[in-house]
Image 1 (tube, rainbow, N blue to C red):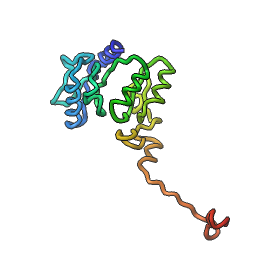
Image 2: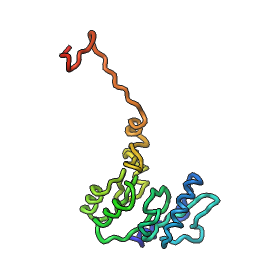
Image 3: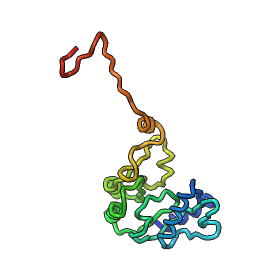
Image 4: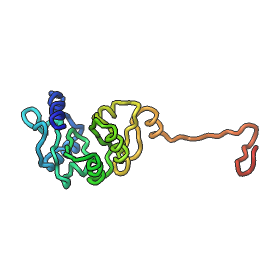
Length: 188
């Protein structure tokens, strides 16, 4: 997995360097990277380094961070991804459920249908992407995007779900031919 990940990230070229939208978010991701204190794949060097001036961070995998590190306890919202070696799908699901709050989105990379089903049923995330990254979820206007638990509630950025999420629906009943009677008082 790591060699494929590294190749895909290197193929991004200059798009590997991602600008973050605000100083607070940049400093948070910068802290997570430094606190993890692990090998990065691909390495962060040359044009691919933290850039304080334009608040950019290179897309980077963090190889086997310790479970006590912030990168495994907080939502990241940046171009870094912890990569952990596991012995089984059950171990992977157990780690996800143990290390922190329910994630906004969880990623599963597998060729096995049984592993996919186990991941989907065993991980309590707002969204799950199988063999794809966040762009596959966020860029799909037919998919709701929202969290569960501390990661946020609700679902929707666009489409019908967004309209439902950000609207207060008002139900109106208008009786014909006088006053309506309720179920409890008998039929009209």
